[in-house]
Amino acid sequence: MKLDVNVLRYLSKDDFRVLTAVEMGMRNHEIVPSELIARIASLKHGGSYKVLKNLLKHKLVHHDASKYDGFRLTYLGYDFLAIKTMVNRGVFNGVGRQLGTGKESDIFEVVKEDGTVLAMKLHRLGRVSFRAVKAKRDYLRHRSSYNWLYLSRLAALKEFAFMKALEEHGFPVPNAVDCNRHCVIMSLVPGYPLVQVKELQNPDVVFETIIGAVVRLAEHGLIHCDFNEFNIMIDDDEKVTMIDFPQMVSVSHPNAQMYFDRDVECIYKFFEKRFNMLFEENENDSDGSEAEMDEVGRPQFSEINKNSGFLDKELAASGFTRKDQNELEKLTEAELDMYSDSDDERTSDEEDEDMNETNIKQLESLQLEKEDNNHQVADEHDDNHQVGDEHDP
Ligand code: ADP
Ligand code: MG
Image (cartoon, helix red, strand yellow):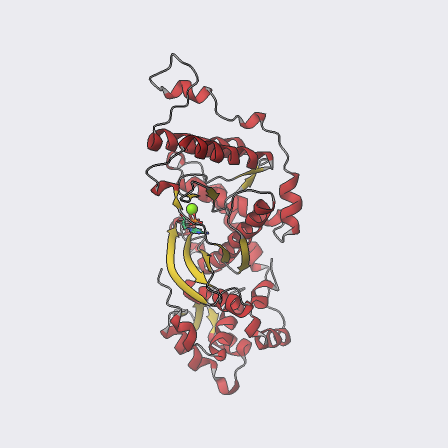
C-alpha cells in the first residue's frame, strides 16, 4: 500500500477535524451521512462539504451515495489519523521506506527528530478473513468497514501490550514505543527475517535460542501461534528477535497443544531444510526418517510448567484486558485456520456466524456521545488520539 505522507503537509486543521468526524460517525454508521459529519465537525458556514471533497481527492475517505449521501474512512484515512496523532505526540516526525507487507499489516520506517529510525506497523486485520466471510454472507457485506477498524485497532493494542510485557520479561522482542488506533511504533530490528538467511555461522546456537524462546514463552503462559522463519529476525551477530504478536494465545486455550506443536514443528522443519540439521537422537536412524524424529527431542507441551498468571495480570494492567483477549482469540482463531492449508474445514459456518455476531453486537453497542460531547471532542481534534481511545469497547 502506498503511503504518501507528503499529503499530510497539505492537510489543514479543518481537514483533520472532518476526518475525525468521519471516524466518529463510523462507530454506528457503515457509511456516515454527510449531514452527520457536518454536525460532528461543526465547521462554520457548512465548510465540511468542501473539506470532504478535498479528503476524497486524497483518497482518505470513500464516497457512497447508493442509499444516501455519505462517506467512510479508507485505510489511508485511518493511517493518517494515527500518524497525525503520533506526530503530535512527538513519537516521530517523518515516514520513510516500506519495510514489509505482511498478510495483515504494512510496515514502514519512521524517523524521529534526532534521526533515530523506528518501525511503524499498521495493522490491517480483517483484510483476509472478512473477504472470505463476506463472500458467504450478504448481511456482512455492509459491515466490513466497522470490522476492519475495530479489529485492526484491537490487534494493534494486543501486539503493543504483549510486546511490552515480553520485553519486560527479557524476551528478545522489539522495544514497544507507542500505540494509537491500528498503529504500533517499535524499535527497528536490525538484520533480516530468518527466511532470507541462507547461511549461519552457528545454526545450532540460533536453533537452541529459538526453541528455548518458544519453551520459555509457554512457561510464561503464552504461545506465539505464528512462530516461523518470517517472524524471527536475525542480525549480523546472529542475534535473534521475535516479532509479530497479534495472534498469541494463552496456554489455557483449548487448542494450545496444537498451536504449540505447530510452532515447534515449523522451526524444526525449517532448520532441517535450510541448514541440514538432523534432530534424531537414535544413532541407527541415520536416514532421518520423520516418524522417528517426531518422538525424539521435541519439547513436549504437556511437560512444560503452566503458569498463565503472567498473561492475565500483566496484560490486563497494560490496558489489554482478558475480555479483549477472548474476543481477539476467537477472531484470530478463525484467521489462523484460514492460513493453515490442511485444515480448511475446521472453521464451521456456525463458528463464523458466532464470531461475527459477537463482534457486530459489540460494535453496535458503541453509541455516539451526545452532540455536546461531540463538539467538545472535535474541538480537541489536535490531540485526536483521545477521540479514538475515549470510548473503547
Ligand atoms: P505481519 O503480521 O503482517 O506478518 P510482521 O510483524 O511479521 O507483520 O512484519 C512483516 C515484516 O516486516 C517482517 O517479516 C519484517 O521483515 C518486517 N518488520 C516487522 N517489524 C519490524 C521491525 N520492528 N524492524 C524491522 N523490520 C520489521
Ligand atoms: Mg509476520
